[in-house]
Length: 161
Image (cartoon, rainbow, N blue to C red; front, side, top):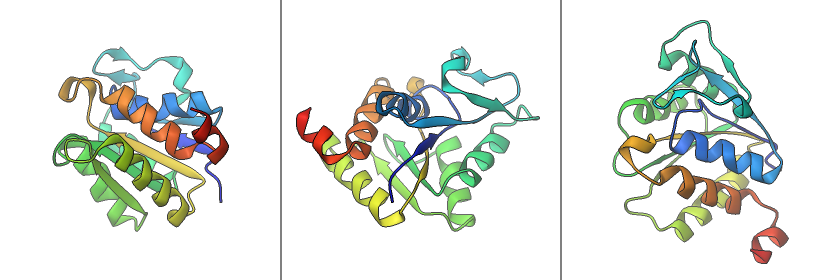
């Protein structure tokens, strides 16, 4: 199977890194965001193609993104907390494949390998990417973008970079 789509809640940080990777790769992308398109830096930009839920509750959009995907990757720096922990718990509850990547203890190269293997083993066509906000881990959006892009790119594209 081949990855076709990345969904996310569009929050700053890991969420947007995943969506930006989808845009870079020319994959379908989108997902669900809370009513009002709220994120820590204001409204979620339209380029991410997110659908607002009827609720402003972040837990609602988290559940919808897990349910809209075949598998979930949660990127953090440290143990999952807040929304990252909620995403992981809900993916487990729903019986969806889940990969937790702690970028504080996992190198970018190792993370790429883990995500690449996870995509193959899970057979995910639609991947939910979630994790730590930019305010809690400066630079995580760019780090996740590179990891996901290189993990999901066709092999020839990965070699050329």
